[in-house]
Length: 187
Image 1 (cartoon, rainbow, N blue to C red):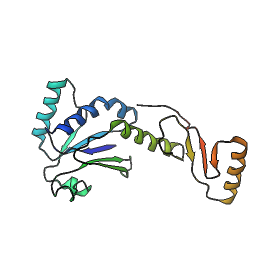
Image 2 (cartoon, helix red, strand yellow; image 1 turned 90 degrees about the vertical axis):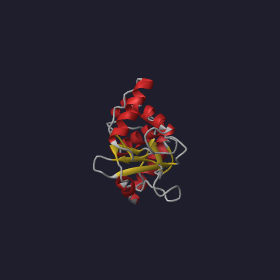
Image 3 (spheres, rainbow, N blue to C red; image 1 turned 180 degrees about the horizontal axis):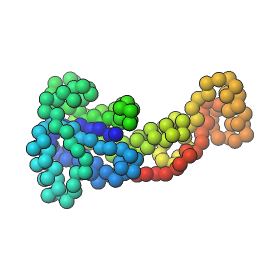
Image 4 (cartoon, rainbow, N blue to C red; image 1 turned 30 degrees about the horizontal axis):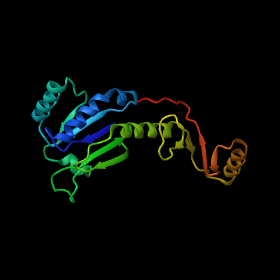
């Protein structure tokens, strides 16, 4: 699941984000990720805003938007930044796994919109890491090599060191690369 909070309906940056998320919706679907928006405004305001986006662009917002009028959800998730305001939210992004565990939190300042390709990349990286029991290197893009988890025993360390000498597939016994089982760039 991917969960994000908007600063408010009818605000410029949030409008561009809703358009961008709507355009990228099929990519989130391909990753089995559900989008969920959260805003401090009312359901009526959400409907009017989503309708205006549709009237001006022809884009239908395909994901639900929850009204958090009291800010209760925002406070529980730490979306209120006291250094910014006691009531205004920052642009938080939460990636939550199917077990309800928060895997990633991105916090954008009020004046900078979210970067959808990075969010999609991180979702795919989390999925690849889990399915391949691996870790993901810096600047990874889908279908690039991933990293073997560090060895936990001396026996495995020695096996990896020997395999590294033969395969030349890494930097050292603790940093060896391999290709994901199912290489597929889904965005």
